[in-house]
Image 1 (spheres, helix red, strand yellow):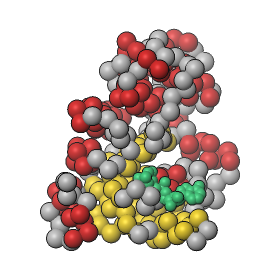
Image 2: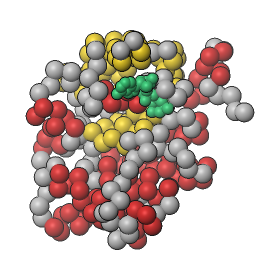
Image 3: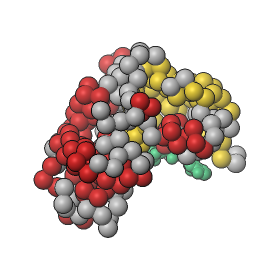
Length: 256
Ligand SMILES: Nc1ncnc2c1ncn2[C@@H]1O[C@H](COP(=O)(O)OP(=O)(O)OP(=O)(O)O)[C@@H](O)[C@H]1O
Ligand SMILES: [Mg+2]
């Protein structure tokens, strides 16, 4: 057993994320007006929405990189808006965040990039276990042979996969993906999308996936929501939304 009890995945089927009436403005820019959302254990929820609509703001609120103005935000049943720094750190160790653009540390090898979160969280000291986890994380993304490469030697798709491996190494219960396939060719996007599903199955993790990529949404989502003008205007499965009669909803599925 590698991990302390506190970061083991929860085995119950309750909501792991529960957001109620969340609001966030920046000066006069009212970005999130009334957001309610639940994510269950093992569920992949995709959020669609135009550029600049507040998708990244929403998931940054979940790890409190952004402090919401109002509303309730519970993760594993705990209200995060009132957490102290210690509680917040503990919570963040259970959440993997794949940032938009997802930068690796350029001056570190792939291996060092993967070791970094382990050292920062001070979870492990045994070098054999660290080695095992690095190998497992790289195998998960099919890039074991990239262990000693520098990020500059990797393609965009490989960097994304290493970014994923770096997040997975902490075995998070929740993974927040901010546009995981942006900038990739359709084939690589599909590989990443399939990987997201594999991770969901293997770890029974819960995820919010922000994407503009309909193929990614189709492959990864159990449920989808569309964010527009500060609220969710629709939710349903990919097929339900795709076949919606609502003109706004339809507009997200139009392929030029
Ligand atoms: N820290 C901040 N301070 C002020 N305004 C911000 C901040 N973060 C985001 N915003 C504003 O909030 C709005 C939503 O931004 P956000 O990054 O969430 O968009 P997005 O939906 O993720 O867009 P994209 O698809 O382009 O990534 C934008 O108008 C942005 O300028
Ligand atoms: Mg964004």
